Image (cartoon, rainbow over all chains, first blue to last red; front, side):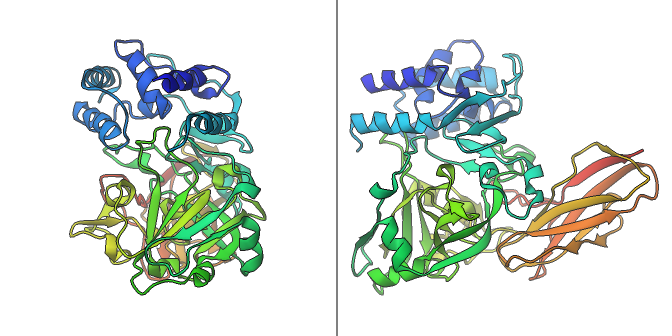
Length: 91
Length: 398
C-alpha cells in the first residue's frame, strides 16, 4: 500500500525524533518489524519487553496486534516476526 | 475514515511536535534493556522516555518535591500515535447518544462562558504506574513511579453541561472520545465510558487549564476530563465527543483492557461493566512515595536528614503516614503538610536524627481516612495495575 511507504519514509528519517536511536538486533525478521510493526509504534515497545515475554507471550502479543489492533500482517510474516522476537528479545 | 491527505497532514503535525533533542542512548545491540533515556517533547522538559510513539514519558520523582507538578515536567501517556494539534477555533465538543434529550455541540468559548468555572486539586495517576515493580514482570509500558502528577485543574462541571442537553431515564453510562486515534483505521479508537453516577458527580470536570495555564498539548489541549480519585485511563485528553448511553459500552478498551480481578480489590463502583470475576479499574488505592531519597544515597551522620514524600488515596484523604528507618521494626509518625483537598496528594515530612553510622532502611506507610493501610505485597493482577506495596530505600550514613 503506497500510504505505508510514505509513513515509513517519514518515520525512518533520522531528523524526525529520537526514535532513530533505537537499535533492534540484526537478524532475519528485523526488516519485517521495521516495515510492519513500526507503522503504528516505535521499536522501544519491543526492547521494553526484552526478557519479559517468552514464546507464548510474544505470540499472544503479536496476535493481539493483528486481531485487536488491526495490524495488516499475513501468516507468513507473523511467523517471521514472532521467531525474531523470541530469539532476540525472548525470556 | 480519514482521507489520505488529512491523514498525512495530521501525521506531520504529530511528528512536528517531537523534539529533536535527546541524550543518546548508550545501549548497544548486545544489551537487553535500553538505557534510561531522558528526552523531551515540545514544551516538556527532562522526562524519562518509555516509548517515543505513541509518546509515553514519565516524570523523574525529584519533581514530586513540589505539591503541584510543573506542567513542563508532567507525565505523558498515549495509546495512539496520531495526535492532532488542535486549533481552538476548529474544536467542537459534540454531545449525543441514544439516551440524550437534545444533542448539542459546543465551541470552547461557549463552554467557558456559559458554564460556571470551578477548580480542583487532584492527582492524575496512570493505572499502570509502578508496573515495572511487579515480580514476575507484567507486559505493558514498564512504568516506574513517575506516571503520575498532581495539579490544580480549572474547568466546568460535566453535570452542568449535561443539564443543558438533558438525560433520558434510560441513561446508564456515558462514553468519551478524544481527538487522538490509531495510525490505521482498523485500530479500535480509545473510547472509555463511566457510570452515570460518576459523570454527574460534582467533582467530575471538563478542564481547560492545569496549574493556571491552558492544558499543554501533551496533556490534552484544549479540554480533558478530570475524574478525581479514579485512575487516569478515564481522564480523556483532547475531548471531542460525549455520548449518553442506555447500554454498557462494548469495546476493547472497556471489556478487555483496564480490568482487574474482583478478588483482592473492592468492587461495586462500576456495576454495569462488572462480570463475575473481573471489573474495570476505577478508584485509586492508598499509596505513598518517598520523593527526595534514592537507593544507596550517602549522607553525613552528624546532622538530621529531612525525608520528604507524598501520599494519596481514592479521595477519602490521608489520615497518617508512618515511617520506619530500620527496615520496618519500628515506626514513627511523619508530619503531614498543607491539605489541598481530598483528591490532591498530601505532602509529608520526617526529620531523621541519626543515632549511628551505617545503613538505614527507610520505608513509608500511608493510611487513608477510611483506615486502609498500604500492604506489604501488591495484589497480583494480569495487567500490573494498583502497585501500592511498601517500598524500601536504603541509605548509608558515614
